[in-house]
Amino acid sequence: MSFFFVGAFALWSVSFSPMNQKGIIVSIVHADDGEDYGDEGDDDYSSSETVSTKQKTVKAKPVYETVLVEKVITTLDPIFTIDTDKDGLVDGLDPHPTVPESEYFTDDDNDGIANAFDMHIGEDDFAYYEQENDENGNGILDSYEAMASN
Image (cartoon, rainbow, N blue to C red; front, side):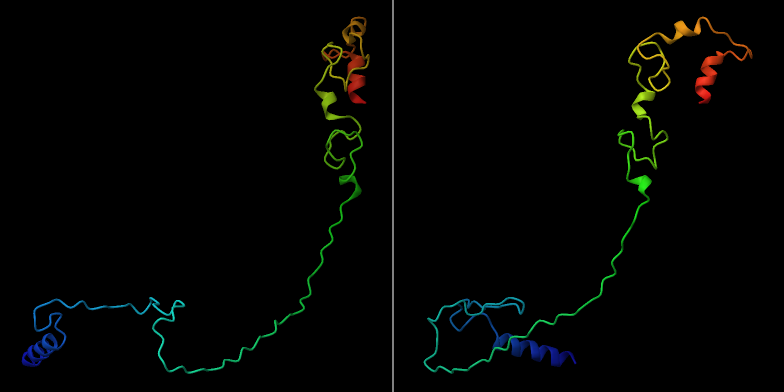
């Protein structure tokens, strides 16, 4: 078996030797199968014999398919589309739909009572409470309790 391999190698080295009889190296060109070294439009090396072939081009028509699409319509309760107090919260999400939420955090007359609870706008509300009393003894003035219960 080794004799066969030695013989094949000797035959190959003689047949495909990169050197010719004079000892000059002959370059061997190798191209990979994936690379395309095809004609780039140069007709300098065209042969004298020309074979003409006609190619028939067939254009395929596009295939259109009709697909039914389900149309979904979402309706909202009108309470989620109206903002009565114009504070940016729709009435369905607004805890106080008739009073703007900013009124619960602002005090225009600086009397310590927010505008939403201020019974005497532009006046000091505590001046009115000085003459009132706490009949039930819970620490809250009776008129303020009545206002908060409304």
